[in-house]
Image (tube, rainbow, N blue to C red; front, side):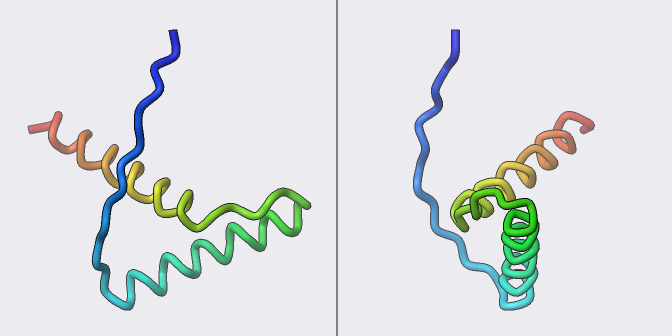
Length: 65
């Protein structure tokens, strides 16, 4: 059985360096998609990926304690 998790809206504030780094990451994903003739990723999906990966890292660290 597949469980569908509802999504929630969040609001974050990041510094300009982090914003610039995320923008560069997004541009690299867009460039790779264009070169491979894939669909361009949505920026919101990139932020979701970053948040998910960050949370997975935090959960791993919590389990170590």
